Image (cartoon, rainbow, N blue to C red):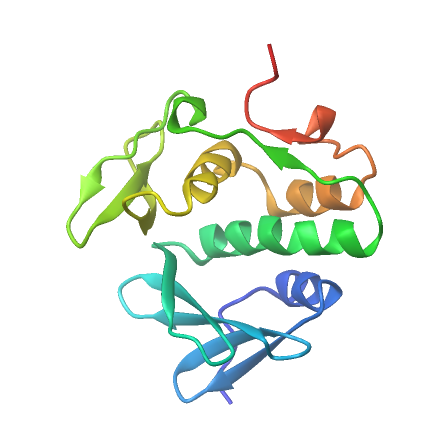
Amino acid sequence: MSRSPYSDAFIQWAALAGNTLSLYKDIWVLADNGGELCYYLRSTDMHTITQVERGGSEVFIMSAMSILDIERYFTVLFGGDIRSGRRLRRISCTTGLDTLYSHCKTPLVKKSRLALVDPYGQTRGYFPAPIGRADDVIWFSWILDASLEDLRASYLDPDGLPLFPGLRIGPPRE
């Protein structure tokens, strides 16, 4: 069996959220315990995530050059499941592209995808456009430079610390 592209700490995080990782042909599959929802990771020149619900069609979620950015995405996604399972308050996200992290940009690129460009001019991820999953682009812009350790700690902490004071991703409420 091929070695997983994911870190051991991430695999443990996914398991804590009730997900298992397996390899099917050349696709890494993250599935919830019931198998109702699966995420596929394909890696060629980029890492691409698609999602499929039982009996449904595959839907593009995001792609990124770095497996660390893929882990960041899933760490937040699974963090919500972990908080829910522990009966901790939800960490909310700002909405609307006007709340995108101020130094990031989202130009439209080919194949109807938005590129998330960080403050240094590096493209960190591609998301569906028009923005069907706008919240993904927004919260991802706010966690681009967060360490995976701090993300996990924040989702386990009842107050969302150290990263999410006020249990919010994005700018503080005015």
